[in-house]
Image (cartoon, rainbow, N blue to C red; front, side, top):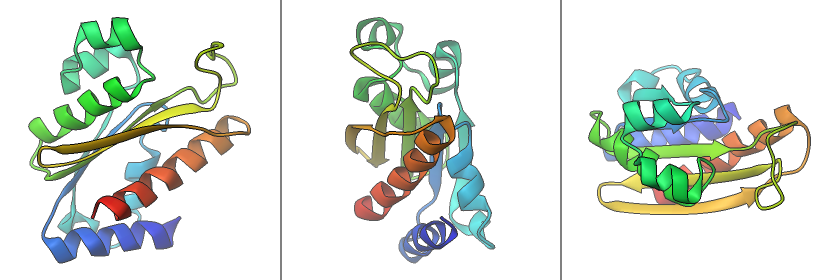
Length: 155
């Protein structure tokens, strides 16, 4: 994971960009992985851990209607999280993650392991939802790795 975080950092630094994260189910793990890289203050702006719906609304501006209509675990919510993180920070690139890490909380439509991601740069936002297998730790670890790979693709 550290090598991947170093690659993300090098790509951000080479482009003169700062990253902001908006994490829910990963609880700051992406931020932890990135700030484990020496010199990350050159390219890491800040991280939001918005675990509750209230935090998503208050800290990132996720709309109540989005949460009601699509749920916290949705690409729509992830996209609003990423957009809000950019709007409320000095970053130019954002990553958002929201999901059901388990072992409880899943539904038939969104079983445990369902994770939605969004990556944003300026006004361009991409998103996707993935389904990871394994226990809570495994779902979270796979989410962090997928999020970092997504950042490399964006950059």
